[in-house]
Image (cartoon, rainbow, N blue to C red; front, side, top):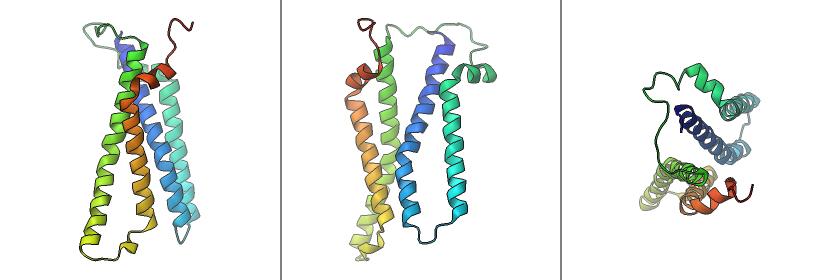
Length: 172
């Protein structure tokens, strides 16, 4: 594996991870827009523009990885051209990527879930009205729990998921 291949993998993993984050946070954003008492068109347009810009940047990261590597000169100034990793085939790389994505999902969502559950328990213990724990927080916890579940599934079933995304030499 060359240094350029390594940076291709890292950049594409970064883009796929953030693309998954956008997909998983989009329902939460749409729900917050639908429950807003006063819907401001300017906020909707700015949010849509930001999501579109981020989506375009992620597509550039995925489709034009070599251009990014060349512009940032990531493959220059190394002592060796190759990285010796051992016997890593496509399925093992896919497994590694899936485990990383699942781990990032768990790390990013676990703190938010624990915070909101703690906030809920704090309100319940202090005899505050639980109805104040509005629908937005309930949906937010549900989406974060779903993200945790997806991260857990990605980590525990990485081998079968990797086989779905890779083509073996037998299939060719």
